[in-house]
Image (cartoon, rainbow, N blue to C red; front, side, top):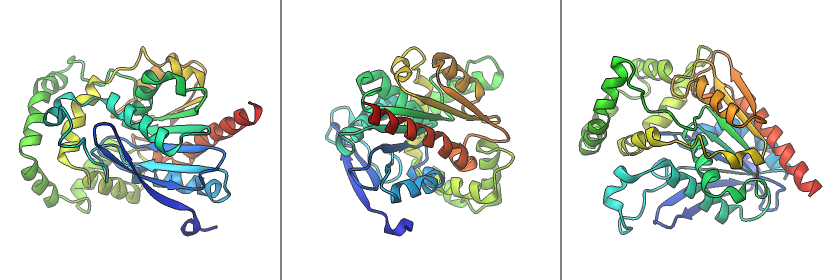
Length: 321
């Protein structure tokens, strides 16, 4: 069956504070297991397209329902309602915990029954950790497996040990303020250096990709990030630095976990995944050679295989229950 013949619907998940999460649901509601994919900072659900394509045969066969969504403030999803309390100070107050609550709402509304497997890339993995910390009862019963891809449980803020790190710590609050107040100027500057510009591609490749990444991968990733807003960058940057769930991972010990990281990841280096593996001793750790931060693109097959193992375990557990 071709992808065009798949059963697909677009869903809008409204959160308690009035944000609306844009989601795409592929497959039948009575499929034996649901896979939910959460993307990273300044990305969108399209960052998972390569992995989604690899699991599409399972969707077409009726074995899987696939949900991709845009995190709040990213893609087609909105921020909290202007009439909700605290809207004016959203940048100052935003925490990754809010994204965990959003994911919980999405599961409650779009996958209220049956086993679920979660996969999160970068900030998406942090989102899953926040959900596990806040709603531990979901893990083991409803959530049957988790893939944590190029992510971290905490310690992302610069330590201040080097001159560059000290400067970053000193400038961070100012960077956020300037980014918000000068958003229009920054947007004009971004238009002058679009993803088609070789300099833009060089910067993205050096920061996010490994040695084996193709030009097509880099351009696709650059286009997704370019479509994000300065507000998304500024609002979530300090939230990522404050994220710390290193002592709140207990619920993840109740389910199979696959941890994946690139050996040349600069944003969430190997040490973060190794810390996760130490905290979750039954988890499987995979380090991909010549790979950067964008594992769902760079090593889509590796990520899909890890998810496949989780899906098999989730449905086997259901059959045995």
